[in-house]
Amino acid sequence: MLFPILGRLFAVGMYAGASINDSHLSNTIFKKIVPLIFYTQLLIYAIALPIVLLFGTPAIPTWDVFVALLLLAMIGVGFQIPYYVALRRVDTSVVVAMFSLSRVLVPITAFFFLGERLSIVQYSGFLVIVVSVLALNFKRSEKKTRLNSAFFLMAIVAVLLSMETILKKFALNSIDWYSVLFWYLVLGTGVTLTFLLPKKYRKEITETASSLRKNPKSLGLMLMLNVPPMFSSFWSLGYLPASVHKAIGSLAPIFTLFFNWLMHKFGFGKLSKEEILKKDIARKLFFFAIIIIGVIMTVAG
Image 1: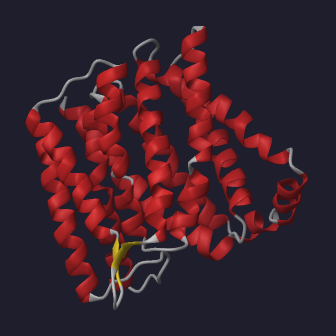
Image 2 (image 1 turned 180 degrees about the vertical axis):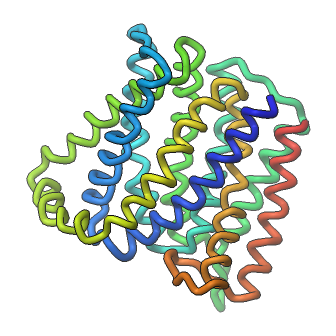
C-alpha cells in the first residue's frame, strides 16, 4: 500500500502546481472560461491518449461501466467551470483547500455504493478536514462573518468530484486502470468537443485561438503538471480505498502555498491569486496543519 500512497502524493503535489498555473491561465491569458477548458483539455487528451496505449490494449467495458465512464468524462470537463470562476475570486491555496469538501461526501457514497467501511477514527478525520476548510473560507467584515462566494462554487465542485471518485472506483473494480483512463480520455474528448455546438462558445473558441500561439510556455507547463499526475492518480486509486485516496488529496493546499511562497521568495512573479502576508500565511498554515491531522487520522485510522 506504500507505493500507491506515494503515487497519490506525487499526483497531489503535481496537481497543486497545476492549480497555480491554472490561476495564471484563467486570470492572465484566457479572458473566457469555455475556451480555456476547451483548449487545455484537448491538449491534455491528445498527449495522454498515445501514452496510455503503451500500457496495454484497453478492455471493452460492459454497458454499466461504459455509462459510468461517460458520466465520469462529463464531470471531468464540467466541474472546471465553477472551479475556474472560483480561481478568479480567492487565493489559489484556499480554492485548492476547498477541494477537501468532496472528501466528506466520498466516505458516505463509498459506503452505500462500493461497500467501503471506515473506522470511527477515519470518519472523525474527515470531519476535522471539513471543519478546517469551512473555517478557512469564512470572510470577516466589520459587522458580520460570512462564507465567501467561492465557497458555494466549490461546494458544487465538491459534489461533482465526490461522484467522480465513486464512478472511477466502480469502473476500476471491473477493468484495469489504463483501460479506465483510455475510455475517460476518449469520452472526455467527445464531451469537450460539444462546446463547439453553441454558436456563442464556438465564436469565443475561434477568437481565443491566438492565445495558444502566444503562450507556448504556459501551455507546456500545463501539460507537464497535468498529464503525469493523471496517470498516477488513476493507478493509485486502483489500490487504495476511495475514501483514503480522497483524504490524501487534502494535502494539496499545503503544496500550493509552499510553491507560491517559493516563487515570491526567488522572484519568479505572482502567477496565482495568493495573499502572502505573514498574517495570512500564519492563518492558512494553522488550518492546513489541522487538515494534515485529519488526513493522518483517515489514512492511519
